[in-house]
Length: 249
Image (tube, rainbow, N blue to C red; front, side, top):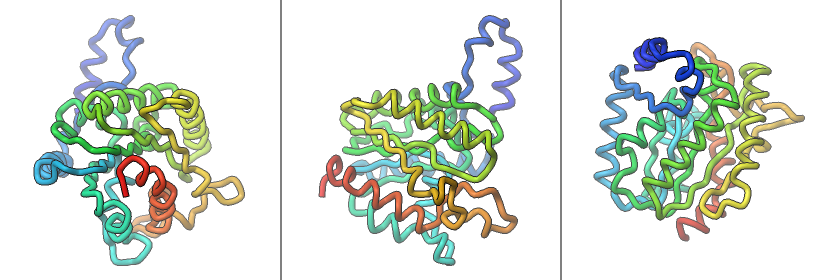
């Protein structure tokens, strides 16, 4: 899907191309069988549980809430069951999704018919990966995600999480900091959107703590990006007051 979109963009006249921000463009991934299957599953999930009080929207970090790997550090489901299952929460995290793919999902009915009290958004980390979209592209993409969420869920309060720290490159670190700083400025004082930067939870001596990420324990190992169950517990604990405030006891 992304390849086809890029080919179409090459056919655009130069002035039009100059104004296209792919991080804001709706880019589906239906050409990937597993992604299509998860998409269809997510639509069935929302129909089966239309009274969810909390929705999580995001990428693989969010999808990991449902993972129980059996090693302790990758057993996330118990954390979800403790903090979010009592709210009939729905987990709409898709591995590898950028802002563009989340925009596509929102455009195609991801949350249609739902009426959650609280929606938690964690997106943007993959923009800095293979697409190599910088903060200048990513921030408008995240803003588009927030606008579409608010449009489709007018009764929800949105908690927008900052992009979490990772250990990938100095460039990614710089884009992460720039993105979070921009989002903090944009959403300060917004009555419907609460921006929360949880970066400090994952830092030790000013750098991302590798012990709070599962990736180096995988086979083969990857650069640290995905929090361990301990890291996800820290996230849930930090958000608990907001969950109580907006989703109820």
